[in-house]
Length: 188
Image (cartoon, rainbow, N blue to C red; front, side, top):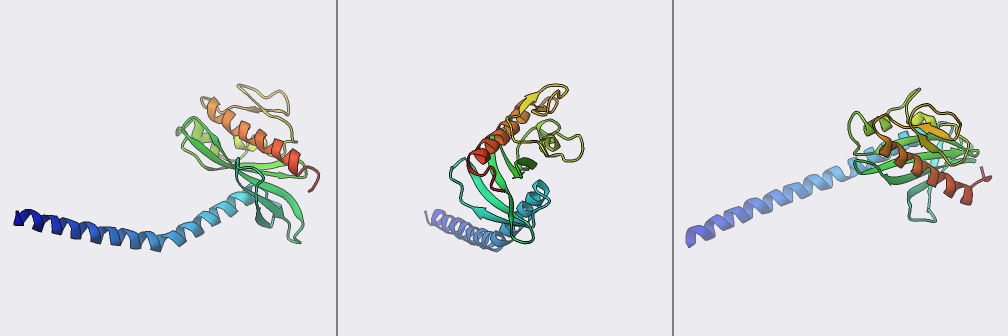
């Protein structure tokens, strides 16, 4: 019996020390992780709206958006809005940023996702001809996902083999456009 108690106390001590060390490491890394996330967010906001110099968080009127930011130029004039929205893709939640300025989509960027590598994960690729770049400079209207060639300005071509991801992102962009038109249209 004494041996069992001794082993139990040793195990308790090891567990307590390990818990304290993990708690200390968590505390030490909490701030650097938050700073890194903010730097990444600002970089992605700038990609979605290159003409903006500053982004100020505003409270959304709906719980659908994680955040809404006013984008300002270097003189402090509001030139657009950045929306952080989540949508359900094929592999899970996709978090993306949608920028709108002067009643046009300035850009869309994926912040986080868990889509299939080589298929839905192509949604994060940028550059000419990429899925995500199809949204840039679109006038505000409902967009449709099509398989194959795009025939009108209201269409975006789906990622081959990732129609669910393509539709999820496009639906999220359409939701942002609807919200923008109801709450901000004509104000910047």
